[in-house]
Image 1 (cartoon, rainbow, N blue to C red):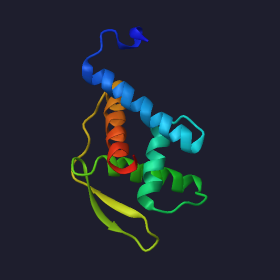
Image 2: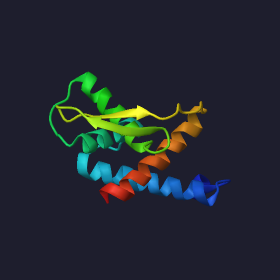
Image 3: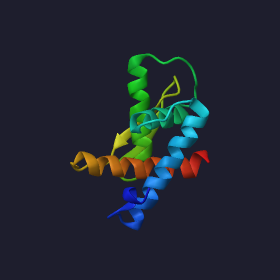
Length: 120
């Protein structure tokens, strides 16, 4: 295990531990270890507030809801909820381009923060 932490900052190590904890929590409740996309989907479902079978397009919409939820206040603001219960958001500013690894770390941090605040 020490090799995983070699040349890592305390912040990076803490994120690795927190991300593992989120993944274990989701695996315990859904029997799958999630990746970022699955977490975005689950956050979207949580924010939508309805559990049912979703069509492919709805699953993509739920991932968008999850992403907007994570980026509330920085890049998106809540706009309204439509008659079917779907939350809608307005873009406040576009996200700056990031290298994929940096974007992945950014999203993991936001997902961990969401789970700590809203789930457990």
